[in-house]
Amino acid sequence: MGWDLDEVERPLVEQLLGLGWRFLEGDLDKPAATGRASFAEVIQAGSLRSQLHALNLHDGQPWLDEERLTQAVSALTRMPGHRLMEANKAAIALLVGGLTVEGLPGWDGGHMTLSAISGMRRNRTYSRHQAAP
Image (tube, rainbow, N blue to C red; front, side, top):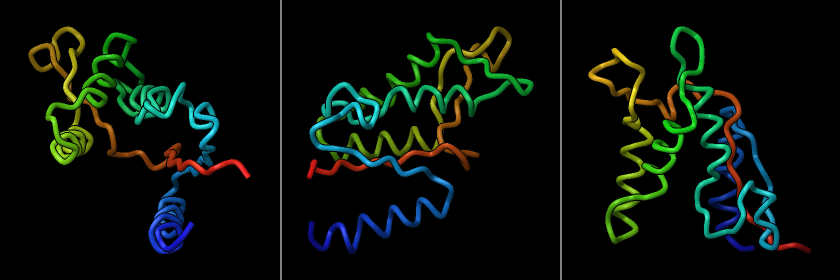
């Protein structure tokens, strides 16, 4: 595939594996191999939903219901801005700073900031797409 695979992608994958991420081999002909209906889906929404649910606990228990998970996933999949750089900056700000959704009654004025990255030492997934041989 060229220098980008050998000099960029493979070293990044190896680094992520060393940090505990899971590598998910993709296939350019089969988007379902990476948990998507089509390659137009940039985010693996199912994986994102399950990680947000597992990562955000209240008294040691998951508290996010389907409506709150939908709010969070929507915030990450519907980026403001018309340019790619603007959208990337907005997505990174949400991932690093957290996502705000409606909280449980009595919480911080009814809102809660979800963690999207902190503490994710296990069950991380990185995928790339490879043409079928």
